[in-house]
Each structure stands twice: as C-alpha cells, then as structure tokens.
Length: 64
Image 1: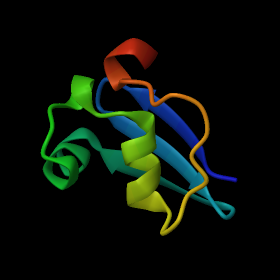
Image 2 (image 1 turned 120 degrees about the horizontal axis):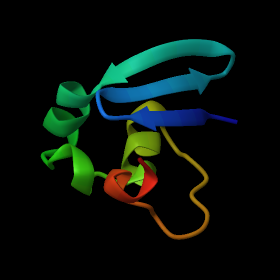
Image 3 (image 1 turned 30 degrees about the horizontal axis):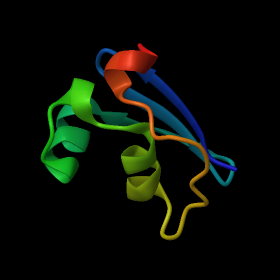
C-alpha cells in the first residue's frame, strides 16, 4: 500500500516501506499540470507501475 500526504510544497510518499518526498515542481513537470490541478491518482501513477486506483480522483486543491 502506498501512502500519500500532500501539502503546499509537494507530497510525502511511503512506498513499500520506503519514505521519500516528491517536490511540487517535479510533479508539475511530470504531469504537465499546475499543482492544484494534479490528482491523487496521477501522483500514485508516478510512484507505482500499475497502481490499483479506486474511487474518484481528487484534485490536490481539494485535498489541501
């Protein structure tokens, strides 16, 4: 299970027991979207090869 914790500057990730941070600029570059418009599903797809996506995607602007 992957855990994502968003804030104004990026996202803290716990993936397979490893903790790391993805900075806002890196996520924006990878998704080609502005930070508020990126969804949690898009970030999960950056972290995992074949994530199990459930529920509706949520925009970061709605999360933070």
